[in-house]
Amino acid sequence: MASISRRNGAWQYRVSYKDGTTYRNKTRGGFNTKRAAQLAAADIETKLGRGANLMASERLFCELFREWYETFIEGKYSPDNQRLVERIVRFSERVFPGMRIREVDRTIYQQALNKFGETHATETVRKYNIYMRAFIRYEIEEGAIFRDPTYKAKAIGNVPEKKESLKYINFSDTQKLITEVRKDMRPKYVSRYMILFQLATGCRLEEVLGMTWDCINFKKRTIKINKSWDYKDTLDFGGLKNKASYRTITIDKKTLQIIKKLKAHQSEVHLATGLENAKNLVFANDQMQLISPEALNKVLKKLCKRLELIELTSHGLRHTHASILLLHKRVTLKYLSRRLGHENIITTLQTYAHVLDELEQLEDRSVDDTMEDLYQESPNS
Image (tube, rainbow, N blue to C red; front, side):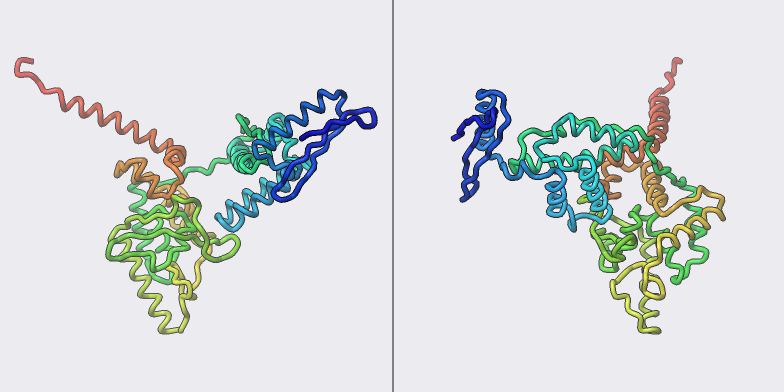
């Protein structure tokens, strides 16, 4: 029950309620009229009836956000993903300093997004909004708040996207690159094996580095992608980018034959030097260590320059694999999305939109040719 009283010329309410096994009081004053205090008290009682957590509603937005991050994100996702959410938590500490979670309404939230968008790209603003909205919805379920300040929020940035150039080479240029790679194919040049493997599978670089021998099935000609290598921070195995990234895909016989030679060489090195491939890494060099991404990209760019091709990075090999499957083999977008480990087919569609435009032009011509084949000259024509 609420009690209404007058104190120091203003009206106040006091609501008593049970929090678990503890009895608590919620008091607020400063109302000009008794009626205003009664309405405010009634609102509190309604929220309590709906399961409100009044203690949580009084806590700071950024304090609860960090607690949510440490409970549900930290240590459970990839290092890159964790770094992103950590930046968003720090952002909330800057823009909502000292603000209780119940005080952040739609206007305040949208103003914060607008200000952030002045110096950032739309995709970045969108990501910030996604994680703050996930946190807010959790707090709604917990009863800390009942209204969603992120509802219909507009995540728009004013800085042009820094789009990675979707560099890839066509089928014939890929043949040239493979031929050049194989000219000096020696196990001590492990980067060349990685280039062929990435062209054959479309794996991300961190997935290639994290590949272990137990993940390659030479009999069934498949590879299992179930971990990555964190070459930025821990220098150890880590999780994959998303749930869909955990996958098993096929690999061609020729690439497997080449990779098998690398396995035999590692065994020879072990017998000669006693060095152990402790982590069972596929692409370990003669020191039983992984080469750096910088070293791999340096070799790749040198090969491309020698062949007068577009200078690719390792990620360009992934794009090349995808574009060849789309344009040369005409695989479905659904299949490609699964093979690449994209979170959903929309990601694949957005990434390879211009490749699909090129494919559409080829399909248009194919339709024209088909229609012409259907026309048969009449004996009387």
